[in-house]
Amino acid sequence: MVAALLLLSGGTTTATAAQPSTLALDAAQASGGVRVTGALYDSRRRAISGRTVTLSVSRGETRAVTTDRRGRFQTTLRVPSSVPTTVLTVSGRFRGDNQFSATSTAVNVTWRNGSSGSTKPPPTSATSTRPPTTTSKPRPPTTAPPRTTARPQVVELQATASDDRVRQGYPFSVSGVLTVDGVPIQDGAIRVDVPGLASPDFSVLTGPNGTFVSHSQVPVDARPGRRRVTVTFLGGGGFPQTRTQVVITVVKAPTPTPTPTPTPKPKPSTPPVSSTPSTVAAPLVTTGSPSPTPVPQGVELDVKGRRTLALGTLGLVLVLGAASSVAYLARSHGGASDHTPTDHLID
Image (cartoon, rainbow, N blue to C red; front, top):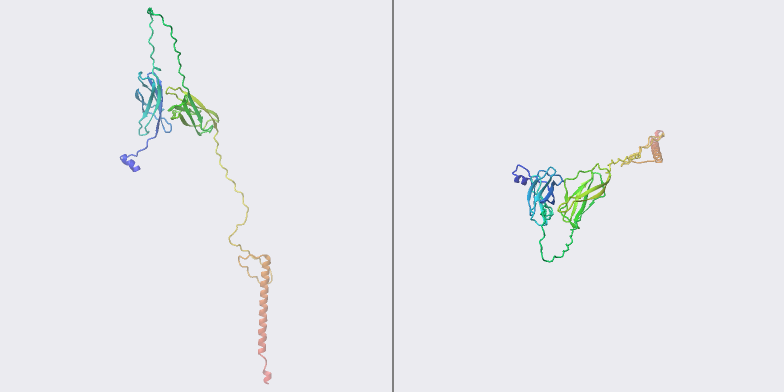
Protein backbone atom coordinates (compact mmCIF):
# COMPACT_ATOMS: atom_id res chain seq x y z
CA MET A 1 0.00 0.00 0.00
CA VAL A 2 2.88 2.36 0.75
CA ALA A 3 4.27 1.67 -2.71
CA ALA A 4 0.89 2.54 -4.22
CA LEU A 5 0.80 5.82 -2.33
CA LEU A 6 4.30 6.67 -3.46
CA LEU A 7 3.35 5.85 -7.06
CA LEU A 8 0.26 8.06 -6.94
CA SER A 9 2.20 10.95 -5.44
CA GLY A 10 5.06 10.75 -7.90
CA GLY A 11 7.35 8.86 -5.55
CA THR A 12 8.38 11.94 -3.59
CA THR A 13 5.71 12.41 -0.91
CA THR A 14 3.48 10.13 1.15
CA ALA A 15 -0.25 10.86 1.19
CA THR A 16 -1.84 11.32 4.61
CA ALA A 17 -5.53 10.91 5.35
CA ALA A 18 -7.39 14.12 6.14
CA GLN A 19 -8.93 14.45 9.58
CA PRO A 20 -12.74 14.30 9.81
CA SER A 21 -14.57 17.60 10.22
CA THR A 22 -18.06 18.51 11.41
CA LEU A 23 -20.22 21.50 10.49
CA ALA A 24 -22.95 22.78 12.83
CA LEU A 25 -25.62 25.24 11.63
CA ASP A 26 -28.33 27.34 13.25
CA ALA A 27 -30.78 29.52 11.32
CA ALA A 28 -33.59 31.91 12.20
CA GLN A 29 -35.71 34.40 10.29
CA ALA A 30 -34.40 37.96 10.47
CA SER A 31 -35.14 41.27 8.85
CA GLY A 32 -34.86 40.82 5.10
CA GLY A 33 -33.65 37.23 5.20
CA VAL A 34 -32.38 34.38 7.32
CA ARG A 35 -29.67 34.83 9.95
CA VAL A 36 -27.24 31.86 9.93
CA THR A 37 -24.72 31.02 12.64
CA GLY A 38 -22.54 27.95 12.96
CA ALA A 39 -19.19 26.43 13.72
CA LEU A 40 -16.64 24.13 12.10
CA TYR A 41 -14.66 21.70 14.27
CA ASP A 42 -12.68 18.48 13.99
CA SER A 43 -13.33 15.01 15.39
CA ARG A 44 -11.93 16.06 18.79
CA ARG A 45 -14.27 19.06 18.97
CA ARG A 46 -11.47 21.54 18.37
CA ALA A 47 -12.17 24.67 16.34
CA ILE A 48 -11.09 24.78 12.68
CA SER A 49 -10.28 28.41 11.89
CA GLY A 50 -9.61 30.24 8.63
CA ARG A 51 -11.69 27.88 6.45
CA THR A 52 -14.30 28.86 3.86
CA VAL A 53 -17.86 27.62 4.32
CA THR A 54 -20.45 28.07 1.58
CA LEU A 55 -23.97 28.88 2.85
CA SER A 56 -27.19 28.96 0.85
CA VAL A 57 -30.92 29.20 1.51
CA SER A 58 -33.57 27.78 -0.75
CA ARG A 59 -35.28 30.47 -2.86
CA GLY A 60 -32.68 32.91 -1.57
CA GLU A 61 -29.03 33.92 -1.53
CA THR A 62 -25.79 31.90 -1.55
CA ARG A 63 -22.75 33.29 0.26
CA ALA A 64 -19.27 32.18 1.36
CA VAL A 65 -18.03 32.95 4.87
CA THR A 66 -14.74 32.33 6.71
CA THR A 67 -14.49 30.78 10.16
CA ASP A 68 -12.85 32.84 12.91
CA ARG A 69 -10.23 31.68 15.40
CA ARG A 70 -12.92 29.83 17.34
CA GLY A 71 -14.22 28.15 14.20
CA ARG A 72 -17.43 30.19 14.23
CA PHE A 73 -19.19 32.22 11.57
CA GLN A 74 -22.41 34.20 11.11
CA THR A 75 -24.13 36.02 8.28
CA THR A 76 -27.57 36.91 6.92
CA LEU A 77 -28.79 35.36 3.68
CA ARG A 78 -31.27 37.55 1.80
CA VAL A 79 -34.67 36.13 0.89
CA PRO A 80 -36.99 37.94 -1.54
CA SER A 81 -40.02 39.47 0.11
CA SER A 82 -42.20 37.79 -2.47
CA VAL A 83 -41.50 34.37 -0.99
CA PRO A 84 -44.70 33.22 0.71
CA THR A 85 -44.88 31.59 4.09
CA THR A 86 -43.09 28.26 3.79
CA VAL A 87 -40.25 26.18 5.16
CA LEU A 88 -36.82 27.09 3.81
CA THR A 89 -33.72 24.91 3.90
CA VAL A 90 -30.40 26.44 4.87
CA SER A 91 -27.41 24.42 3.68
CA GLY A 92 -23.74 24.68 4.58
CA ARG A 93 -20.75 23.00 2.97
CA PHE A 94 -17.05 22.86 3.69
CA ARG A 95 -15.16 21.55 0.67
CA GLY A 96 -12.23 20.26 2.70
CA ASP A 97 -8.50 20.64 2.19
CA ASN A 98 -5.27 18.73 2.72
CA GLN A 99 -5.77 18.70 6.49
CA PHE A 100 -9.51 18.26 6.99
CA SER A 101 -12.11 16.31 5.04
CA ALA A 102 -15.19 17.83 3.42
CA THR A 103 -18.47 18.01 5.32
CA SER A 104 -21.94 19.47 4.90
CA THR A 105 -25.20 19.85 6.78
CA ALA A 106 -28.59 21.52 6.49
CA VAL A 107 -31.31 22.90 8.77
CA ASN A 108 -34.90 23.97 8.16
CA VAL A 109 -36.34 27.33 9.08
CA THR A 110 -39.95 28.43 8.95
CA TRP A 111 -40.31 31.51 6.76
CA ARG A 112 -43.30 33.68 7.52
CA ASN A 113 -43.92 36.30 4.90
CA GLY A 114 -44.20 39.77 6.43
CA SER A 115 -43.58 38.62 9.97
CA SER A 116 -40.15 40.18 10.19
CA GLY A 117 -40.35 42.96 7.61
CA SER A 118 -40.49 46.64 8.44
CA THR A 119 -43.38 47.45 6.13
CA LYS A 120 -45.93 49.69 7.84
CA PRO A 121 -49.51 50.28 6.81
CA PRO A 122 -50.04 53.48 4.76
CA PRO A 123 -50.62 56.54 6.95
CA THR A 124 -54.09 57.99 7.09
CA SER A 125 -54.69 61.45 5.72
CA ALA A 126 -54.61 64.28 8.17
CA THR A 127 -57.66 65.99 6.61
CA SER A 128 -60.98 64.47 7.26
CA THR A 129 -63.42 64.00 4.42
CA ARG A 130 -67.14 63.97 4.65
CA PRO A 131 -68.81 60.73 3.90
CA PRO A 132 -70.73 60.83 0.68
CA THR A 133 -74.38 61.42 1.06
CA THR A 134 -76.62 58.62 -0.04
CA THR A 135 -80.27 58.15 -0.22
CA SER A 136 -80.05 54.44 0.46
CA LYS A 137 -80.89 53.13 3.85
CA PRO A 138 -77.90 52.65 6.11
CA ARG A 139 -76.84 49.10 6.52
CA PRO A 140 -76.84 47.63 9.97
CA PRO A 141 -73.37 47.27 11.45
CA THR A 142 -71.88 43.86 11.01
CA THR A 143 -70.29 42.10 13.90
CA ALA A 144 -66.58 41.62 13.37
CA PRO A 145 -65.52 38.00 13.61
CA PRO A 146 -63.61 37.20 16.77
CA ARG A 147 -59.84 37.43 16.38
CA THR A 148 -58.22 34.07 16.74
CA THR A 149 -54.81 33.98 18.34
CA ALA A 150 -52.51 31.20 17.24
CA ARG A 151 -51.55 28.94 20.11
CA PRO A 152 -47.84 29.28 20.80
CA GLN A 153 -45.73 26.25 20.07
CA VAL A 154 -44.43 24.45 23.09
CA VAL A 155 -40.76 23.45 22.79
CA GLU A 156 -39.79 20.78 25.29
CA LEU A 157 -36.24 19.71 26.05
CA GLN A 158 -35.71 16.57 28.10
CA ALA A 159 -32.29 15.45 29.27
CA THR A 160 -30.77 12.88 31.61
CA ALA A 161 -27.23 11.97 32.70
CA SER A 162 -25.65 8.58 32.15
CA ASP A 163 -24.82 8.36 35.84
CA ASP A 164 -26.05 10.30 38.88
CA ARG A 165 -22.68 9.92 40.65
CA VAL A 166 -19.55 10.81 38.69
CA ARG A 167 -15.99 10.75 40.02
CA GLN A 168 -13.55 13.62 39.66
CA GLY A 169 -11.87 13.57 36.25
CA TYR A 170 -14.21 10.86 34.91
CA PRO A 171 -16.33 11.22 31.75
CA PHE A 172 -20.09 11.06 31.55
CA SER A 173 -22.73 11.68 28.91
CA VAL A 174 -25.98 13.62 28.70
CA SER A 175 -28.70 12.35 26.40
CA GLY A 176 -32.23 13.54 25.70
CA VAL A 177 -34.88 14.48 23.17
CA LEU A 178 -36.10 17.78 21.71
CA THR A 179 -39.75 18.14 20.66
CA VAL A 180 -42.22 20.85 19.69
CA ASP A 181 -45.83 20.07 20.52
CA GLY A 182 -44.76 16.46 20.88
CA VAL A 183 -43.17 16.31 17.41
CA PRO A 184 -39.38 15.61 17.28
CA ILE A 185 -37.14 18.44 16.08
CA GLN A 186 -34.27 17.36 13.84
CA ASP A 187 -30.91 19.16 13.52
CA GLY A 188 -31.52 21.22 16.65
CA ALA A 189 -28.28 22.58 18.16
CA ILE A 190 -27.78 21.41 21.77
CA ARG A 191 -25.05 22.71 24.08
CA VAL A 192 -24.07 21.18 27.44
CA ASP A 193 -22.37 23.36 30.07
CA VAL A 194 -20.56 21.60 32.93
CA PRO A 195 -19.75 23.60 36.10
CA GLY A 196 -16.03 24.27 36.30
CA LEU A 197 -15.45 23.96 32.56
CA ALA A 198 -15.53 26.77 30.02
CA SER A 199 -18.59 26.88 27.78
CA PRO A 200 -17.93 24.64 24.76
CA ASP A 201 -17.38 26.20 21.36
CA PHE A 202 -19.46 23.51 19.71
CA SER A 203 -22.88 21.93 19.94
CA VAL A 204 -24.40 18.59 19.02
CA LEU A 205 -27.32 18.21 16.63
CA THR A 206 -30.47 16.23 17.26
CA GLY A 207 -31.18 13.25 15.05
CA PRO A 208 -34.30 12.35 13.03
CA ASN A 209 -36.10 11.32 16.23
CA GLY A 210 -35.09 14.51 18.03
CA THR A 211 -32.59 12.63 20.20
CA PHE A 212 -29.06 13.72 21.07
CA VAL A 213 -26.03 12.53 23.08
CA SER A 214 -23.27 14.81 24.37
CA HIS A 215 -20.11 13.53 26.06
CA SER A 216 -18.50 15.61 28.82
CA GLN A 217 -16.04 15.20 31.67
CA VAL A 218 -16.00 16.33 35.29
CA PRO A 219 -12.93 18.47 36.09
CA VAL A 220 -10.26 16.74 38.12
CA ASP A 221 -10.25 19.56 40.70
CA ALA A 222 -14.04 19.79 40.98
CA ARG A 223 -15.27 19.92 44.54
CA PRO A 224 -17.35 16.93 45.62
CA GLY A 225 -21.05 17.61 45.89
CA ARG A 226 -24.17 18.22 43.80
CA ARG A 227 -23.69 20.04 40.51
CA ARG A 228 -26.18 21.31 37.96
CA VAL A 229 -25.35 20.63 34.32
CA THR A 230 -27.15 23.05 31.99
CA VAL A 231 -28.49 21.69 28.69
CA THR A 232 -29.49 24.42 26.20
CA PHE A 233 -31.33 24.30 22.89
CA LEU A 234 -29.85 27.24 20.99
CA GLY A 235 -33.06 27.94 19.11
CA GLY A 236 -33.51 28.51 15.39
CA GLY A 237 -35.97 27.47 12.75
CA GLY A 238 -38.59 29.72 14.29
CA PHE A 239 -38.30 27.94 17.65
CA PRO A 240 -37.29 29.82 20.79
CA GLN A 241 -34.27 28.99 22.88
CA THR A 242 -34.96 26.71 25.82
CA ARG A 243 -32.93 25.00 28.47
CA THR A 244 -33.08 22.46 31.23
CA GLN A 245 -30.77 21.19 33.96
CA VAL A 246 -29.46 17.80 35.00
CA VAL A 247 -28.23 17.23 38.55
CA ILE A 248 -25.18 15.04 39.12
CA THR A 249 -23.20 14.32 42.27
CA VAL A 250 -19.44 14.71 42.00
CA VAL A 251 -17.67 12.05 44.04
CA LYS A 252 -14.06 12.26 45.13
CA ALA A 253 -11.85 9.97 43.09
CA PRO A 254 -10.21 7.24 45.16
CA THR A 255 -6.51 7.67 45.87
CA PRO A 256 -4.60 4.60 44.77
CA THR A 257 -2.76 3.00 47.68
CA PRO A 258 0.17 0.65 47.22
CA THR A 259 -0.55 -2.94 48.07
CA PRO A 260 1.57 -3.99 51.08
CA THR A 261 3.98 -6.82 50.49
CA PRO A 262 3.15 -9.71 52.80
CA THR A 263 5.93 -10.56 55.27
CA PRO A 264 6.93 -14.20 54.90
CA LYS A 265 6.34 -16.22 58.04
CA PRO A 266 9.46 -17.83 59.55
CA LYS A 267 9.62 -21.50 58.77
CA PRO A 268 10.63 -24.01 61.48
CA SER A 269 14.24 -25.08 61.18
CA THR A 270 14.09 -28.66 60.01
CA PRO A 271 16.97 -30.57 58.58
CA PRO A 272 16.79 -30.97 54.84
CA VAL A 273 15.36 -34.23 53.66
CA SER A 274 17.79 -36.04 51.43
CA SER A 275 16.71 -38.41 48.70
CA THR A 276 19.53 -40.80 49.61
CA PRO A 277 19.48 -42.66 52.90
CA SER A 278 21.69 -41.10 55.52
CA THR A 279 24.70 -42.97 56.90
CA VAL A 280 24.57 -43.77 60.59
CA ALA A 281 28.00 -44.19 62.11
CA ALA A 282 28.23 -47.02 64.62
CA PRO A 283 29.73 -46.06 67.96
CA LEU A 284 32.92 -47.73 69.06
CA VAL A 285 32.58 -50.66 71.48
CA THR A 286 35.16 -50.55 74.20
CA THR A 287 36.19 -54.20 74.78
CA GLY A 288 39.36 -56.14 74.99
CA SER A 289 38.68 -57.86 71.71
CA PRO A 290 39.82 -56.67 68.30
CA SER A 291 37.93 -53.84 66.72
CA PRO A 292 34.63 -54.97 65.23
CA THR A 293 34.03 -55.04 61.53
CA PRO A 294 32.82 -51.63 60.35
CA VAL A 295 29.12 -51.46 59.55
CA PRO A 296 28.41 -51.10 55.77
CA GLN A 297 27.09 -47.72 54.66
CA GLY A 298 23.38 -47.35 54.33
CA VAL A 299 22.52 -49.79 57.10
CA GLU A 300 20.84 -48.26 60.10
CA LEU A 301 21.47 -50.15 63.38
CA ASP A 302 20.21 -49.46 66.79
CA VAL A 303 22.25 -49.88 69.96
CA LYS A 304 21.07 -53.42 70.60
CA GLY A 305 21.89 -54.55 67.07
CA ARG A 306 25.37 -53.12 67.29
CA ARG A 307 26.05 -54.96 70.56
CA THR A 308 24.80 -58.25 69.08
CA LEU A 309 27.02 -57.82 66.03
CA ALA A 310 30.05 -57.10 68.21
CA LEU A 311 29.44 -60.13 70.43
CA GLY A 312 28.89 -62.38 67.39
CA THR A 313 32.12 -61.24 65.85
CA LEU A 314 33.98 -61.83 69.10
CA GLY A 315 32.52 -65.35 69.42
CA LEU A 316 33.49 -66.18 65.88
CA VAL A 317 37.07 -65.08 66.55
CA LEU A 318 37.18 -67.21 69.71
CA VAL A 319 35.80 -70.25 67.88
CA LEU A 320 38.28 -69.87 65.06
CA GLY A 321 41.10 -69.50 67.58
CA ALA A 322 40.01 -72.64 69.46
CA ALA A 323 39.76 -74.60 66.24
CA SER A 324 43.24 -73.50 65.25
CA SER A 325 44.61 -74.60 68.62
CA VAL A 326 42.97 -78.04 68.37
CA ALA A 327 44.32 -78.57 64.87
CA TYR A 328 47.80 -77.63 66.00
CA LEU A 329 47.71 -80.08 68.92
CA ALA A 330 46.43 -82.85 66.66
CA ARG A 331 49.27 -82.38 64.23
CA SER A 332 51.77 -82.28 67.02
CA HIS A 333 50.43 -85.55 68.53
CA GLY A 334 50.37 -87.38 65.19
CA GLY A 335 54.04 -86.55 64.51
CA ALA A 336 55.12 -87.95 67.86
CA SER A 337 53.42 -91.34 67.23
CA ASP A 338 55.09 -91.71 63.85
CA HIS A 339 58.65 -91.61 65.45
CA THR A 340 58.29 -94.67 67.69
CA PRO A 341 61.80 -95.72 69.05
CA THR A 342 62.97 -99.03 67.48
CA ASP A 343 66.61 -99.05 68.50
CA HIS A 344 66.10 -101.23 71.54
CA LEU A 345 64.13 -103.73 69.54
CA ILE A 346 67.01 -104.27 67.20
CA ASP A 347 69.36 -104.85 70.03
